[in-house]
Length: 204
Ligand SMILES: [Zn+2]
Image (cartoon, rainbow, N blue to C red; front, side, top):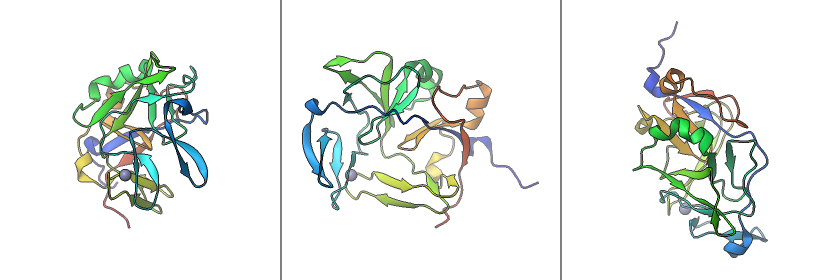
């Protein structure tokens, strides 16, 4: 038997399965053109030198104006533009105590100017990047946002992840395995059954 990693170096990865993403409210944002099509340009978007648009990784919490509230079936969702993670409070309350407020921020969803109850955005400032054995990563030199192409087996390689109870990045939410197991954390509705992500040396 190979030695097993200490439990503080393993996380359960919660990622939404829904394709029913949430559209931003076009009337709330100025418009930009990207690849020849109009896109909303919220104040929390960064433009990288190559023209790529993404959420500014340097920010803590992101508030979003949405066209329509998320469906009630799913407890994890995302914005179709920019992939802002959305979490229903019915599941957030199971992990809310794991949030390190220095790193992870909760933002509000607004629909026609009114706060959408029961939901928050969740975002981490310059989060650890999820890597993959046959993937690649592109990082914005301005804000540090990393875009990962996942192919092969996924893992973390940044030692900064060690011991962290909760990690949030564009790929989803990661709860430390021993914590998730000890509280019998249920899988959010509409999410994949979580896989295990470990800390490993970088492969490429
Ligand atoms: Zn950037």
